[in-house]
Length: 274
Image 1 (tube, rainbow, N blue to C red):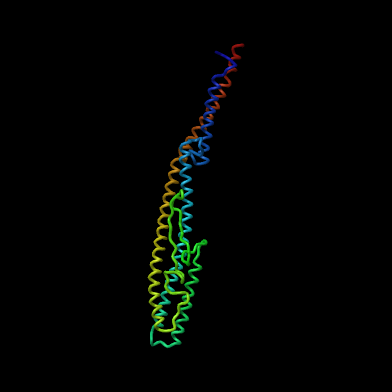
Image 2: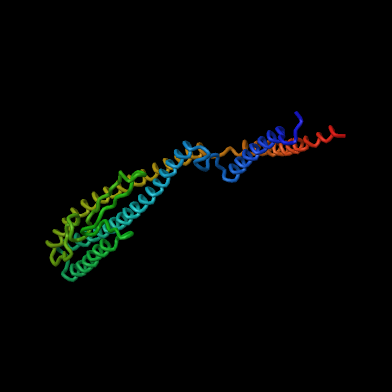
């Protein structure tokens, strides 16, 4: 039927052109964002899964930061502990030298002055070994606890170790000194015990630091795996999208021409009235 009121061909051509334009917009969005699923309307299920995984990745980033802070605190404690260990060795050397009964009083006094200077340095190191407000080796110091998983339900703890002159690890006091060979010999023995205690504490701190570093490495690998998984779910194949873009552009041009032809069809009716 020839009619000027209803142009079925034009309606079909317009529908097809609109569909092509929608597909073209979708492909252009994928190319611009690099994502095949950039919002929930693209694919609700995949978007929800990807968002959940992104939350886990963000959580593991916080875990990594927490572990970094803990590792730094333990590293400071280890550095201070090693410095104190070196001081104890020097102090033991001074005490042993002063324990020599053939030594004269002036020499023993000089050794005692060196000993006291080294002793006081231990207290300064223990009180100043602080990182981010945490001191793990002073008297009453606090341990560290780092996040271990993305939801914060698990932690890795490293206990504090008291390296002060008022604690139980170092068995000499803040006023220890010697004036006689016998007193020097007693202090030398105490320093030997102190070194054993200190070395055991350093071993525990070293083990804690190693545990934190191993877990950080694991968390980094887990975060990378999740990031890769998110990419597998939502990333667009740009080679495929590029080819599809060219095909849709051609299809769009053909659709415009088809619509133009369909729109010109009613003008043929004029031929019936000539």
